[in-house]
Length: 196
Image (cartoon, rainbow, N blue to C red):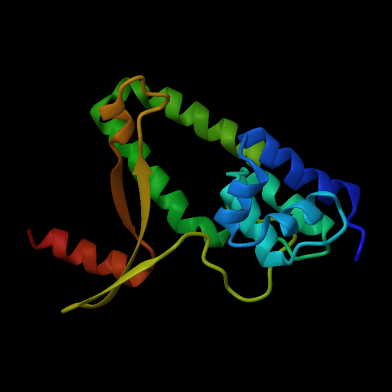
């Protein structure tokens, strides 16, 4: 068996202990044997890329940390890490702007705060695309496509939830916002809105 690098074998073991589930529970969620989980955690076997991605998802590892064990295992990253100014994130950036502009329209006193927040984000994240890019176009969000009398319409979703709610009802509320995922869809929606 191949000896896994220390950083690789430590990641699954730490993550599974952090969530406080047993090896058996983890194995059942992953659809593998408990023995396989044990040999991967001990470093006596290297997990496949698919198993490692599934492992990290089951253990709810943050996306920002999920590429590290994949790289340690010699696999390509599973998640892109782009700046807000990257063209692939243009639609998400536009959606955020729409939400912030609506808030500003309702509360003009928020405008200085929104502008300061935007300046802070640009300073921290930059406005240019990162140097590394994966081969082939990769959408940064899941796109839902609908057939309509106006042709195919593409949307992506953003969800609004209450932060750290102390009420079961509030914790279960999620508002889905759907935004156009391409220029063709945006043009159709603008045309329809102007005829109302």
